[in-house]
Amino acid sequence: MSSPIILSTMSLLNDLSGLFGDAFASIGLDRAFGEVSFSQRPDLGQFQCNGALPAAKPAGRNPRQIAQEVLDLVSGDERIAELSLAGPGFINITLTDEFLAIELDALAHDPRLGVGKVAEPLSVVVDYGGPNVAKEMHVGHLRPAIIGESIKRILRFEGHHVTGDVHLGDWGTPMGQLIVELSERTPELPYFDPSATGPYPAESPVSVADLQLMYPIASRRAKDDASFAEAARQATVELQDGRPGYRALWQHFRRVSIDAMRDVYEDLGVHFDLWNGESTVHDRIQPMIDRLVGAGLTRLSDGAIVVDVADEADSKEIPPLLLAKTDGAYLYGTSDLATIEERIEDLGARIMVYVVDVRQSLHFEQVFRASRLTGIAGPRVVLEHDGNGTVNGPDGKPFKTRDGDLLRLADLVAMVIARAQERLDENQLATGYPEDERDRIAHLVGMSALKFGDLHNHRTSNYMFDIDRFTSFEGKTGPYLLYGAVRIKSILREAAERGLHGGPIVAADRDPERNLMLRLARLPEIFERAAEHRAPNHLAEYIYELVADFNRFYEVCHILSEPDVARQGSWLTLVQTTLRQLELVLDLLGIEIPERM
Ligand code: ARG
Image (cartoon, rainbow, N blue to C red):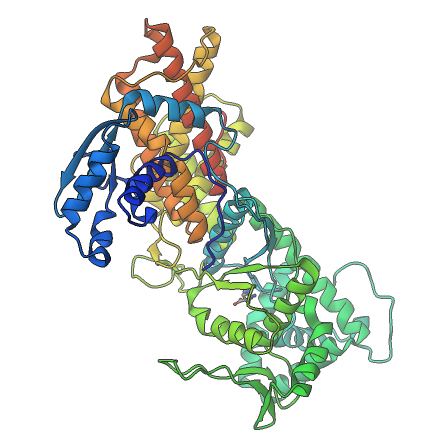
């Protein structure tokens, strides 16, 4: 995993780590030991510095003694209210409310809310989505779409130049199978006349529904019927070699499929910069193979061209990457290898992130190794398979319909929106609003349920799809967060109507207020962690805690009726900052907030 250089931000932890680092340095120890983190035990202190423990051993000293010396050195600092030594050498730190207020004020005035940016923006490609032409999108496509979209937004906000590529499966044998299947059903179509060269009709001879019906039939036939399989193989080769009728027909397959995919992705709020696919790199493949063969980087194995990727240090067997079969056909890995080359050459890609099912990890291991061994990807290029787990049903297996089929993604989306609609009714929300606004709110509530239900899990773990829990307005859910955000918006609207404005942040004088401030100060670190590990779940968890802290704050801090004008102004700034963080983080998760509910 790469660790991008973050421009130093106005992060509280950076400041504190600097202070403690100086103390370590002045007693002759590495300043890195001064690293301060938020406390795991808020009852003992707001922050902690545990560096004395790892510092002790190499220095041959007692950790408690080191901690005591560091503590003595920083104890005069006016930013610090309280210090205590615990256990074998932990230092607990509590800040003065005045200092916390100054930090928060700076954060509140920062357009980036304290979140850092990379010093060196790189060209990043996020490969996610990965649906196949002519094949119905199903529940398995949900996580790559949602997680990939979020990772794309996070890396973009971090300052990188990010390109999202859907990377369609649009070039393999299923295309040949469909061509043959269609040629038997409608031989009179002009696409099948071998001597014709076009032009061909602009209108597709098939709808996406036709294709989705034919796809499983054709793939079954290819398994059961050797002559059909052979014809399909032949058609695939001819398609790839550029037979005009087949290319024209395939363009229709691609077009109608993309139109249908776009609708589903649009509903999910998932947007791609590139609609490339396996076919995009077709013209690169033969030259690439020739070059690798010429350079002696390949081996013939039973007539197939392979790249050995096994390593002595491997604990399990990593089979060679197959580049071309005996009949000359290319494979999934061949196009992925050529795509790495293309992304480096055409997009200057320095980081490639693949958000694809974890079950494809061997495939990516082979492809990545092959790209290194062949020099296609130099040492500076980062290649990551950031795999995703599955969405499971109550039986713990990948989610199915009652008939045992994989659930269509479009049906899943519709189901969640319908449930969100019911939830709004149950909670008497959005009642009396215009019909189209209500629909829009139900859509956003449904999508928040689906996305938050997904993203608050670590991307590699599997989770159970539980529509009732996900759509609830209570608990750790998307709708709970949206409701919280909408409520904050209405508080701010009401304040504005009364002519009240945010003012400088003043020192907190009660716990819920202090806790909200401490929470808001954490975003820079949480963001950094989410970006570094490509793990949106850290942001999802954060935003839930933020709303919970806000609710506790709002319960005791009666903003609109507060007589102390300075305090009232400070609170309003805290409310605004909470909303801005909510908007930012939800946007990074791909979740949109309605204006009201
Ligand atoms: N279409 C592939 C599948 O259905 C996923 C593509 C993922 N991206 C990639 N570059 N291999 O499994």
